[in-house]
Length: 348
Image (cartoon, rainbow, N blue to C red; front, side, top):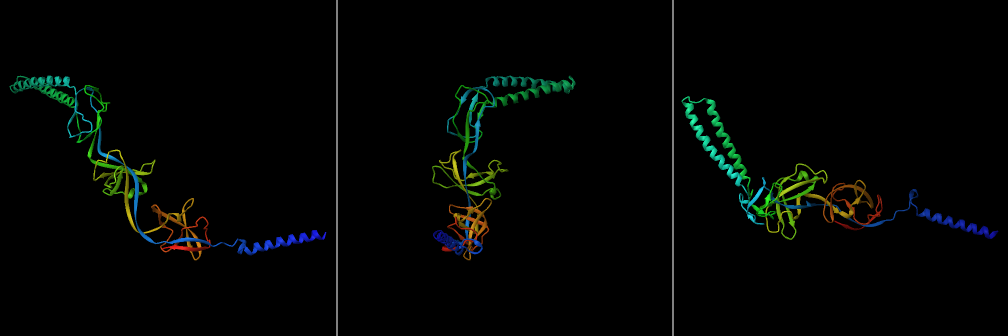
């Protein structure tokens, strides 16, 4: 019985000592004493940055047109050399117009007869040989025939397909002697003396895009940096992508620049000489905002910030910090609000 009592007293003393040990380690309010975290930090200062937007673009010809006939008919002449540059007005395709030429000659003969009739009746009207109505009918006949001649000449003109401007021809899709209709694509022509580039930027930059603004871009296969100037921007933001479409005129053209090719566009949208930049890894993403841990008198303070542009390692802070603040850059997984901090390295 005494052995059991002795064992009970021993266990009670053991747990009492363990409880006293916990109490000595507990701080005010019953919380565990905070461990001092050793971290690195950076002093916030201002610097100059350029806001550069990098987007994808597409090279476009200044003009590009599908060549199709206006009327149906058989090809009697085909002057298409694929890939050749042709001047404006060059005859590309001639469609058979024998029937229209015959109709034109017939109308021209009828016009000569009608003109002679009109002259004779004009003389008779002068001496009172005919009524005014008879003369008016002969004059109307002359006008009708002239109108028919003009319509026939327009129809003959549609049998000749000419280059709308100086440009390079594409691949031909027809052969001599073929019967074509307005649904047939004959070839394409592109104006290659001038090129454009088209790209889109996020809507938040829409107010900063101005006509004449310079841009730079690069294309696949060339080490050269090309320049262009903004020509115009779309009048609305695309609802699906929330992007604004931009077109710019290319300044220098070379053999690498082919319509439809990919381009990487760089736009400088402004310069800020008083930008606060901090390392991107110092920013702690939250559900609705972003935070950084600021060192203040040996403690950490979690501060909400608003960010701006970024590059590969740094990000701009628009609000939430001031120059001279010390931002913690390491150990952020363990840093909480009011954590005890010891700085091992400070980057100025």
